[in-house]
Length: 213
Image (cartoon, rainbow, N blue to C red; front, side):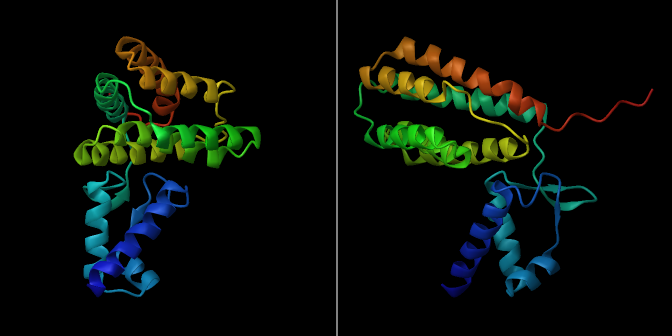
């Protein structure tokens, strides 16, 4: 039990470093250095790395070892496509009260008014998590959480990004449509919502290496 607890602690701290921007995409992680930093055995570090690889936040690269994931253009398109699949499930779920999403929307409004963009981003994630959680599927919820983490990793590399001025109104519209069970309306709004984030995500994606002439 103690080793599992230590592994969870290491995972939590590394995840925060990655999603908080302290460890940028492409940064190499060394077992020895991490073992010394956390004062744990290298086996614990390997377990933590395995967990973060499963979350999509770390990757194994040839000749480089373990690095903070650098998403490619293809990764971004795949993420957006997978997110849209989940949005279809939300749309098909029918009317719900969506208490968690409602609370997150209120938090988002307060954060935007305070110009606290980090809090607004957290509320954004909680809003979508609330919509998905209402489906009652632990597997879909876990899959969505992984994608949210990968998208957040992409967004933390976009310096100076400020949420759109109509961020709250856009989410309020999504919530209203979900509550009403308006399948077609929700799908159209969700598609527009994801497409608005597409240019930002693509702009920070890893570009393919130039092909030798």
